[in-house]
Image (cartoon, rainbow, N blue to C red; front, side, top):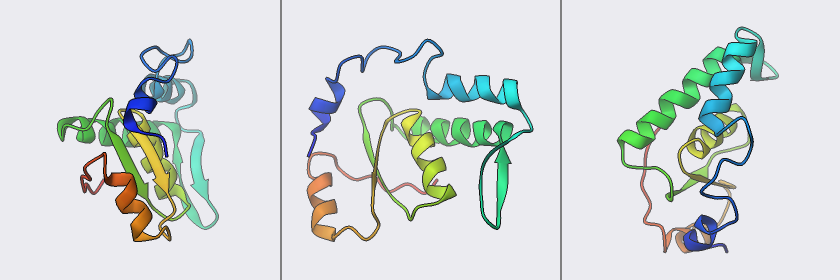
Length: 124
């Protein structure tokens, strides 16, 4: 298991990884460029366009920041595969470290993951 300290000390963690900026900046740019075009959807599921997905990521990111969750925090996400999981991962990754886990993971494993990172329950 990778500790929070190791994650924070990965190369380039303090720098912008790409020339276009971080996730929030990138989705703002994509929303401007692609607006109403479909961005995220699924079979028999409504699609979000780029503007809607950007708003979702920005709003959830702001909610997390307002709750005191930000850079350096590890947020465990336990959702079944799907649109909700992907949008949650993108939202969390825009402000903190997203750690998606399988919801079928044994409780013992989740307890181990949260030992060094006190859990915070937050419903996005």
